[in-house]
Image (cartoon, rainbow, N blue to C red; front, side, top):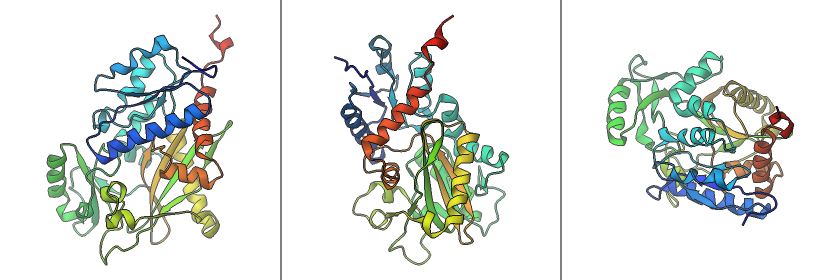
Length: 332
């Protein structure tokens, strides 16, 4: 039975095969709970690789679909299939459109777009060649998110980049590339659509405590998904850059908003940065579908801005509803 406010199903395509996948399922539960508390009818729909769970939705006339799919069957390369299928079914949904999903899916394509727009991003090599042999680099998956496949050994020298790219691409069965390792700080800038404007939420910094001398300060897979490990315990979040370093905060905000414009983002997004020792920011990636669980960094940034979890989810819904065509626009 649908509530008077309408039906908003929450969809994901995660499995229980890895901690990062399980986190998406947890986020779906958090979001569905908030959607229900906001007065909408809802249910969680877990999609298989064929996305068959979407086919019955048109007959149920959802107000919109809350899309949390950032991978399909554990493969981030397939994530744009979900908004593309929703477009084909003419179902409205939250978050970025299919185009921005495709433009940000590959970290290399993202970096090419950033460079073309004159936005700072660390230098990189797709195959590990052409790098200064002494340059410190980090070898990363091209398509995967959630730090899958990243550990302290991902950081190496340019001379070893090609070999390490080949090894990790084979081990993880997905393409890798090398990017200059920015020795410095790590920050994330979350953004949400408000009423006719994009609001930049308080900037979140990841601290690095207990890392040995020479150890890379990175948010690797253990830091995100292995509770009790040193990387997990040693990477707390903090806020306050706006008050303590207003010039840096202003530049991070400018760059994040530039990414919103360059990639034509919608609803909500997050831009990840490294800041070097000279306080120069470098854009690492643009995340069109950051985790929305109630204990995730995005929700923490919203709460720092005085936006509670349910209100945050409500704003995501409202932003999606605002872009629906007006009834009079449908008249011929």
